[in-house]
Amino acid sequence: MLGRFFALAAVAVFTCATARADTLTVAPDNATPASGSYQISVNPSGPATFTIGVLGNSDGYKDDPDGSGPLEAKRPAQSIGLLFSHVNGSSVPVVEATGFTTAGADPSGSFSGGEWTFLSEQFRGTAVGTGARLGAFGGNSFTGTVRLANGAFDHVDVFILGGSQMWSGSMAVPEPSLAGIALTGLLALRRRGRRNGRAT
Image: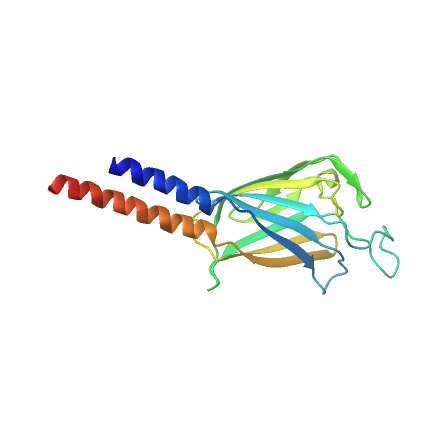
């Protein structure tokens, strides 16, 4: 009975801790001709596994698609990177990452959608061909999955590249660490209960 209680409690804590997706509006890097923004969500689906969603917002310059004028149009994203790390600067390695875009169109282009490739031990994905790029104004969407070496980190740094344009930002994602700590504590209490039961 005691074992079942702790098992159910652990599931409840994990479910609550991973229920909320953290979202961030990724703003232009002022050192580049970027405008507008992208929206990214990081949704924990396990102790060290996350679903990543990215969508172009409807803001930013839509004119001058060839970049020859004084204002450069907002470009579709061709590369997306996330760095999971501690505030002390140490990063958490990526074990596995996948991602793809859907088909769609907006003022930045028409996209057939497709798979992205990722560097080993990093969540840094690149569109395979121009058709797989992520529309700058929400015409299609990107969905990715990342599995980390562990879920103990404090924040996520984000960057998005589109041609010579860049968007970047940072957000705190504490839930996976809290879930891991709570789960570990509950399991330890469960083991202690078993030892006490054997001793009596």
